[in-house]
Image (cartoon, rainbow, N blue to C red; front, side, top):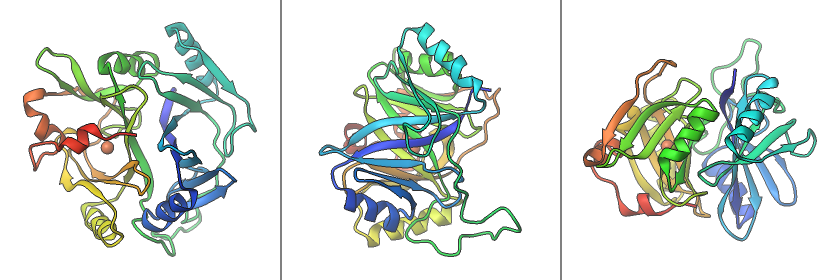
Length: 302
Ligand SMILES: [Fe+2]
């Protein structure tokens, strides 16, 4: 019961054609629907209508992020919990939003618009369900099998994390503490992965990045080749995180939103004891091989 997993991320892009070209030809996502001002993308192994939606806006930024709940009555339950916590909840009726049924939207203490949805239109993956093949028939670019997680900014990481845990039921896998013991980074999960949602210090409402899953390290290497060939600005990597133990590359889409490809990490059960990193180890926590964080990684968000 409760939140199942990340459903989709909605971002603003100032150039629709550039967004379509980059996310389909370089990232290798499929376009499931396009309207005058929106494009909906999915990865080849995803079953649902979309995991990324872009909307035309002169400024790059985050519209909202959406998690999927396990049961229909989870929407009522979580609506009540969010309202009891003191935040107004807005109901979106079936048919109002492309590709999905009824949902609830609310602002979180970190200043983000969050959405919870139960029903998302199933469009099927690229393999089928009867004697399926192992790989899609053809792909372009990096072609990740699925979206994995997102990292958002918050002025008060501890307060934001308390909301996501106490009200929405996220479990804390790892935390980064400053010298006074305050949380400056937290990693939370609902889907038995090291993180579905993470929060780090920064301006309220901002998006640091969203990440696509790759199946192994060799696919990360191939992704780096594709990024370099297409002259995509790489932020950091390929390298490894101390937090999550995942392998990673950070890079920017041509409109300025940070993307990540991610693989590896451990598989936490719901009783997984939280791992703590201290600020004097922040370099290794974030980039284990480099042992330090570049200024751009800390300062740039959308
Ligand atoms: Fe990430």
